[in-house]
Image (tube, rainbow, N blue to C red; front, side, top):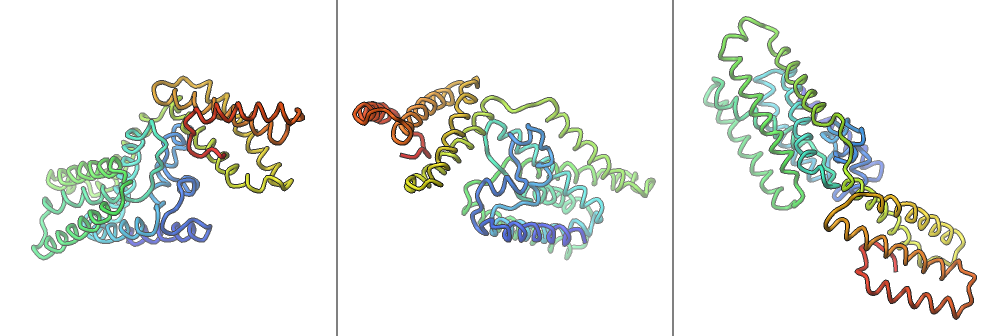
Length: 336
């Protein structure tokens, strides 16, 4: 069964992530991104494949278990009704559409999304339509309804514990699933299914073709905005700043000194790229403060560890820089 195969694939990928050192419960954003999470900046930079790979990446063990329970509960029912081939394509199509919905909603942020939730929401939406339109025994309908209730309960409980759910992906996948369910219902009732025995393949192929067209039309010719580029540079900036913060107490050793100097050079290289961006509002103000703070910080580091100036003159300039730094709001992540 495709349902069991999808569950096995998700479990295998999660196991590989864990064996590589990704935390079981609270993985870091960089880990999710490394393994194929969906990020608007990366997608616009040409990594369209993230819309697919993100469907098989989960943000912790609880996220995985909730999704796999939902997939097992609803997937078995739907696959038994529409067949394995159409079920698999419906799963992928719903997942891709959910990824596009997430991309459109978060395209001006650096949010990284992942998980099978969007695809499962599509299966759930399609299953709901079929559950109330396709003839079946009372016992089968009752069992399917109970499964729906269990899945809803599990997801509601998870939603209370997690405040970073990607609802745009869920809604996009669910809407896609409902549409697929309505098309399936129309085909089943119109007599087309009797005339064309290969209709599941025709429907699957058509749905996949339309989905790929939507993906292409949404992404073709688009590049990251200056705001997105700023967020990306900011992420790199704080990574280097945190490295400095971690190693600075050991600055007396030659290895650490060279490491910190290299990290400061990386920050210096990022600043002109930030300045060149056309930003507005809060982002512009933050960029300007961050740039000024960083320039002062780099100058202070140079005076402290690299300067040949007379001690008295150096101390006076350091004190002046410290006063300017104190007058600024220290951006989070900058080492003292």
